[in-house]
Image (cartoon, rainbow, N blue to C red; front, side, top):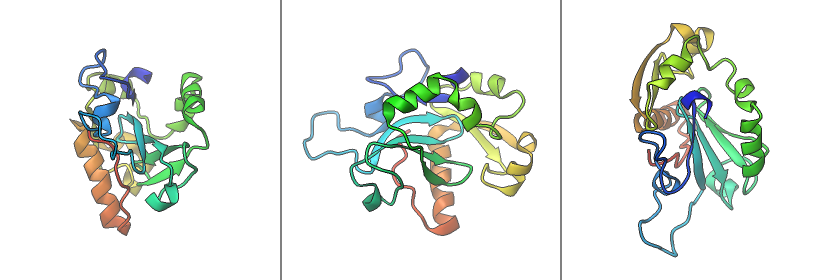
Length: 177
């Protein structure tokens, strides 16, 4: 979606987008039925190119240390290193995306030429920023950051590590990229 900015996971795999994992893979679902398996804190339904994560909240968000209500869409923001409740369920979230909601949502996180940079990435890559998106320097001048393509797993790991170092809060499962 949106020139490769948003990767919404489906099943079994994203055959039309190079490298895009399927919903089962991204959520590390067992290959064979396991009645004991659950999505835990929530089901990862999309990643954005920045390493942001959209999750369908699980049945006990408070126990998982996440905001919002069960079944609500959450966003892990790599520029804020935290979860945000979006106040919508899955169908309302999809409608919002399809009606152009991403432009406003990502205002301040897109730079001149982002479409060209994003268009060469496959479904398992995103740009690594230096200084990182959550830094004061990146917030002041995003265009001045250096960016290079890295595996999405690296972006997600960096966000998790940064959360742990910054305030000791573990964002939890953000996808098996």
